[in-house]
Image (tube, rainbow, N blue to C red; front, side, top):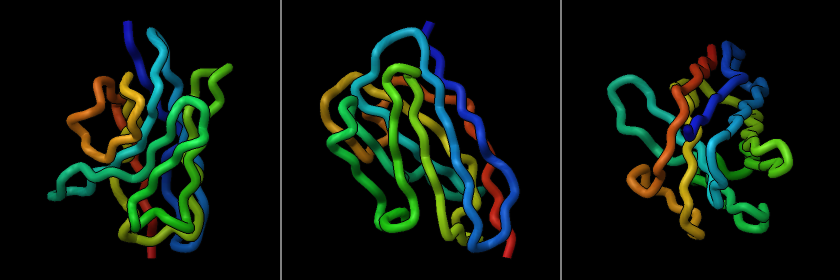
Length: 122
């Protein structure tokens, strides 16, 4: 059974740091990604990484502040978030796909976690 479990969300002040983790089980995923969804908004891509870690992709809003990484031995992906802003407040979802392309489209991802809340106070 495919399962993605996120952890690490919480409340942080603007300018602070949070790290999210996503533990995957059930199958091998070549690409893992992070998306987020704020109230009243569509789910948006944040970052993605291929299996080797050689290819990463970031949304413009994440570039320079967020870093995606993965540990294949632990089947876990991470998202380190620095210089957080109130507009980063959202539910963050881990996603995984079996293709070789780091896609920014939610429809290209076959498995999703339950989400973890990130709240950045001003």
